[in-house]
Length: 322
Image (tube, rainbow, N blue to C red; front, top):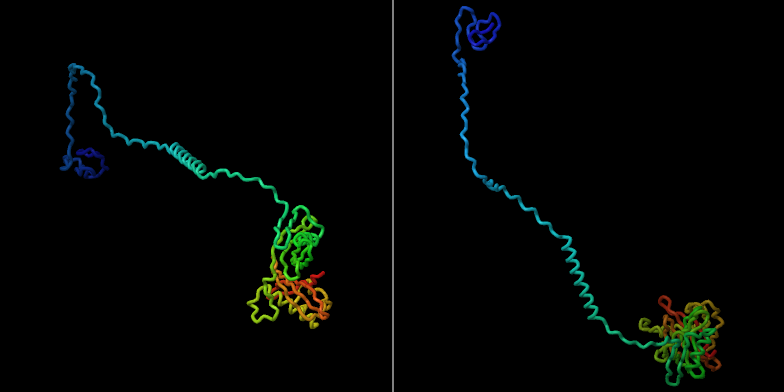
């Protein structure tokens, strides 16, 4: 059923319009709801004639006003890092090079003329009072160590008698003390084996008379010099041999003497006079003494004493008259 007031469709049998509330019974006059506005018919619009525009004068061309847009920030200038570093490095290098050249020129020593010297092929020991000059060849050796020692002694003592004692004997090196008067060993001679021949390689002065030899047992061993220790050890060894105490003598000996038959050493002596003692280059000490035998004869003897631990031991013993 259509409402006569608003035109809305309503179900049949409905008394009032569901939209505007008007009475839908056929005999009732249409009621216009108070709050419903009835639209007025729109007025007819008549288009006015388009007026013809009067001709306008053409203005002269004018350049458009400049537009001042915001100026963008200027792009940062590129740094010439590579070229600047290269130039700076070049300048520094040039400066250093200049300093080096300047320093070299400043501190460069003037060439010194040196005289060309010939290679020395010999050892020369100038003569001393009562002794001759010793000339040792570095190129010509000897077949034995004793031959080399005899060459030194005959030049130095000029044909007079001489005695010796051997120190620090090894397969390729021997050290000797030599003396012309049986009391003072005034030269030490080192002889070495080189390419099958023996050469005198060092000659030095020895003055055994300057050493006071300790003969009696020392009261305070801390005050003894190596020479005094060595002489005292020789004295104790010789007394043990004299008294037949072979085992005690062996306790005071070192190889090779300790490995020999000490009972074969004669002990019939009555007096020993110690002439001197001298330490060698390696610490061994040579002791020279004179033995007076029971028959009144005298013999010059020598011993080599070596340090071992807290004591001194006789390693070699022999006659100098041989």
